[in-house]
Amino acid sequence: MNKLSTSYKSQAFLIFALWQIGMTFSMEFLLSICMIAMIMLSFFQRDEQSTGFRLKVRSTLRDNFEKFLKDKSFLLITIPFFLVLFTSVYSADWQYTLERLRVKIPFLLLPFAFFSLPNIEKKDLQKILFFQLFLACVAAIGVGGNYLIDFDAITNKLSSGGAIPTPGNHIRFSLILAFSVIAGASLFWTNLSDRQDEVQLKYSFERTLVLLMTLFLFMFMHVLSVRSGLLVLYISIGLLLLRYIFFSRRYLIGLVGMIILLSLPVIAYKTVPSFKNKLSYMEYDLRMYLSGNGANYSDAERLTSLQAGLEVGNEHMWLGVGAGDLRQAIKDKYKKDFPEVNRRMPHNQFITIYAGTGLIGLLFFTFSFFYPIIKGRRFTDALFLTINAIIFFSFMMESTIENAVGIAFYLFYLLIILRYLSYRGIQKI
Image (cartoon, rainbow, N blue to C red):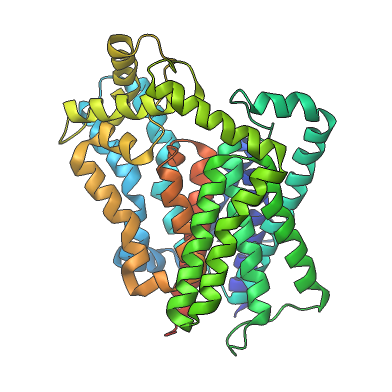
């Protein structure tokens, strides 16, 4: 690697570290700075001929851009931005339309920024994963300490639909913790692998440290008791187990693993008060909703938001109401059909896309999501499969990419791992 590439990668890794801090602790301002810095880094470099600090257009910019336009996997990731841009033609609420465009700009520019990076190798990816695991543990210790200080009050709050206080939104925080658990498992497994192309951890104690941090986060997620995060975590582990069974043909080990996986929530229900209270409230909430008496209960509000979104989408089936007019359309729908329920935007990314951009937009969005996974059999890579599974199932419970932190989480790990696989290629397993 030449001096220019080394400098480029060093600068990028500093941005990565700050990005991970911003994501984990929900620091939107820092995330904005990191995104801008990544974009600037892909367009400009320092002029080595200048005596001061002077920037010039990156020498590889044109070549990178031409290659980017030919890479459908990276190019299709820009689709969410263009869906909003297209529907702006028939959206009347320009203020909200511009807000949606601003939020989705990362989809337009970051795929090119990450595509332009020098090759990301196995050791680079390991550093990124280890730092994420470390940050998640630091954040979990802070959240857990705060919980212990006011244990009884917060535990009782969980019985009425509340949540343990976290940095930023508790659902997005739990998704980051879920991926951190998978990152830790990936680091631990790397050291057990006997494949020659794998990079081993540097010190012997690292494997033990990684294992302890991963187990701590796994157990802490049950204390945190955010159902969205736990669900995507268990689904991801289940997918990895199925992948292991398929490629290794070790059916007995896989069966035992599945039995253990299915038994863990039962054990948590019996032993973790916060987890038990959360599930008990969920049962009560759904019972009230089904009886028609759950207007302002947490889960009932979520289910109503899905119903409202689907009805708005069905009324504008092909092109949607317009991403910029969705907020007002949802507001009008609640006022007309659900006046007694607290208004929420749809808690499902696919329904949000459907209501805003119609079946045509939903088709484009779904294709753009799955194409990078299927192309080149990238689904055979455990880490890439997992990050996409986490995001996909989060889409079922949240509009994950309608806010800055969700977009930052999705694009960062999707593009990092995609860039790594572009360098490494998919090995036949």
